Amino acid sequence: MPLHVPPAPAPALRSVLTALSSPTAVRDARTPSLLRAQGPASAELPLPVHVLDRVTADGETSTTLAGWRFLIRTGDRAVAAADTVLTADGWAFSRFFEGPYITSTELALRQAESMTQPYQPRLLSVPGLYMLALWLHGDPEADGADGGPAPTDLLVPLAPAPPGIAAHRPHRVTDLLPVLTHRVSPTRLLGSPA
Image (cartoon, rainbow, N blue to C red; front, side):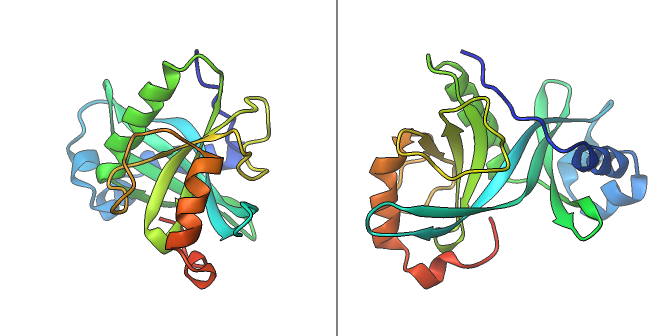
């Protein structure tokens, strides 16, 4: 069943497209794959990036929207990603980057598309574990910028995952949160997103 990708704020998309069309922004990004890319690059699959601020022993969570991430595609594959952040002036381009999370995100999204239940894809950053997960929210029509993980949502840790947590294996939130609660102290959750 297809994923229901939430629409990104129009200013966030515009800021990424402006950066993509700027030779200076691309060159300064120092992402070899983006520099070597042949043909036009497009910003696709906008995913809201939420940071896990708090997990309590009883499974209560608190998340904060940190930005929107776009996969940058040339041809048939993603070669980089672009992040946007909310500033006092609105949504703004933050950075281009590449690395293992790009390929891992694409793989997790392909796996999610083969599931029978419709989901809304998001990203969940767990700074205390240097962990990033594809968060499959069970309400595909929800506002991608709001809400926290529901007990029946799925989390798919992206590679590289922390030791003892299997990458690309979907976990119900109720199953994975207790593991995270034991591995991360409340003070370690506070920090910047992955």
